[in-house]
Image (tube, rainbow, N blue to C red; front, side):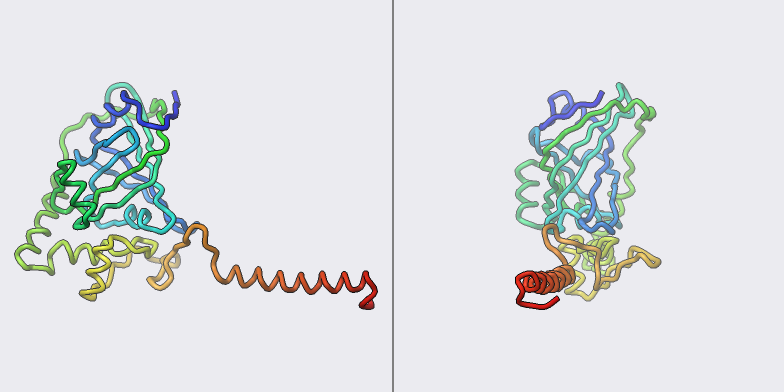
Length: 260
């Protein structure tokens, strides 16, 4: 049944490393922003120690996870594994996510020190600094037989990387990052390398939402934790001022300085 730990127990650690798929959940700080859940498949993850999980963030059309982890005051992340074979089990890892973007010094150091195969199309290494681990029964999860990993994503971005190497930057991965990975669906900044390329080469990021709830690039759904919007401060100041005058007048009446 359900159990909680501050670190990954040895038995759970071994089980995690045997899994073929997991899910990552993040959300922006704004109450009107969109919660994101991303499936991750493949062999591109590992455990450094009982409180540190990592995985390769491979290129795709979305950039929600990186956007939420980059957001100032945010970084919240949950990783979920569940058994599709053998005894039923669900494991969640709660923690703070750290983004080591492709090309950065931290990325290069991590890949080199841990002998990580950063395949073509890798956007970042995501480190999850775990503060809580939870396991539960998983009795309702169905059985599935694993057949093989799909090669489609890897093959697609191998071609994008090769295009950049050949000088065909129009079809290269850097332009792809600028077009599809520079903004989240809530218009938060996404992959920093993509943002820089978009500005430098005047690439307009793709619009990821439609309809009346779609944000504009000028007004993203964002709120920095611990900071209050200026309009709220102005309203509070005016109310405090009015209440102060009213209070002073009431005291004056009571002391006889003013007539009621």
